[in-house]
Amino acid sequence: AYCASKAGAEMFHTVLAQEEPRIRVLNYAPGPMRSQMTDAVRDRCDDVALRSAFEQMHRSDAFVSPLESASKLLRLLRTDAFTSGAHVDFFDPETPSAVS
Figure 1 (tube, rainbow, N blue to C red):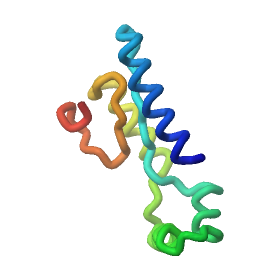
Figure 2 (cartoon, rainbow, N blue to C red):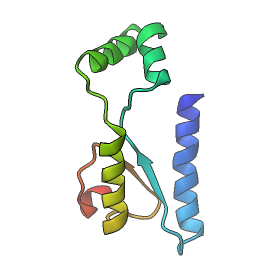
Figure 3 (cartoon, one colour):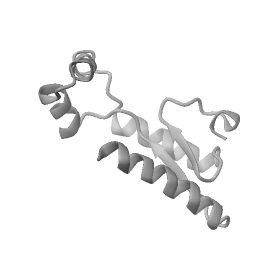
Figure 4 (cartoon, one colour):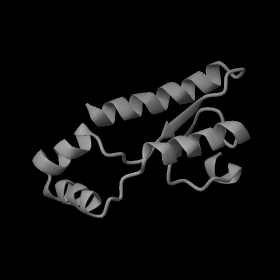
């Protein structure tokens, strides 16, 4: 269900940008943040490789802070450095050509 909702959001943003060109649309992925979901994956996921990856992220404190992610989002919005309808991930470079 999680992956299906992500795919649906991707299509929604793409179509909205095409159908409403006067509206600027951004599908922003904020990066991995510690949450109840990431804790559940780390503690109870049946996929050993995925569980191990989340355990490692937890041990190394590799999660993105909400402030850091929000700051990137605000920079993107202020500089208008994205193509309407685009999917931009926290880890993408912050150059217009990279997010087009």
